Length: 296
Image 1 (cartoon, one colour):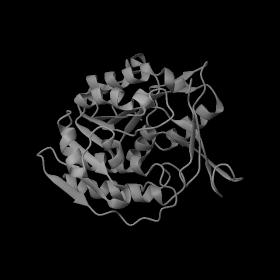
Image 2 (cartoon, helix red, strand yellow):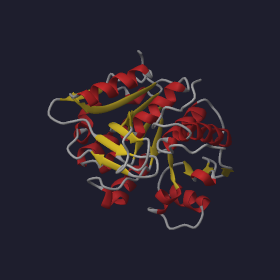
Image 3 (cartoon, rainbow, N blue to C red):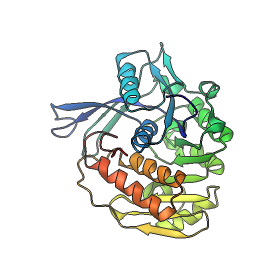
């Protein structure tokens, strides 16, 4: 793929083993895949027909080789992925009932820095995408996200994506809050928003968040549907999409991709919510973080 991608995303992707026949501590059968919110979003975008690039660091190891091969087959642009000979690719072990174990301390992506973005045509992209995970990895990855948002001229998108067990998880609000001033569109789950604002309803949460900087706020409620505050201050809600909930991990990333793709195509916020919910439901109905995203 050549030319500037429509969307540029920055963040870590791990080699992932998903337990298929029970909880993680009892399973004997596993599905090998990869997991990372930003690359999941890129895969979903390419399947929807939009060009996307993923910027990150991987170890010079078989896990990194596999991730590059799979993302390349999906059409994700990988020109700005650095291979690190000294640090390994991160690892995620999980099941389909909620247990997740990360092995990412000291990973290649934990050394991600603004230097890794120097040659990336951020200013020319229609949108950039990051999550609250990256600033929780280490200090330098947080600096990389700030550089991404500072340089962007297109739509600046952040999914809160709060995670436990990381370098900065106990300071997540303090590390992520300054980024919000540089965002146009923020997405997240109800409880993620409540880590920042003590409000009783999704609409009140969104109204509180626009005071922090973003013009558009999407609150994902999973089985409760989703809602969004548009740039004109109007609130929109949709009912949950019908879903066969096989493996919900990655559904939120697919939602983000569907919503962003629709908005970049000129869809209004209610239409984008429907597209996001459609993509999220498709991923929740299949094993793997992005395998179920429908192709355009």
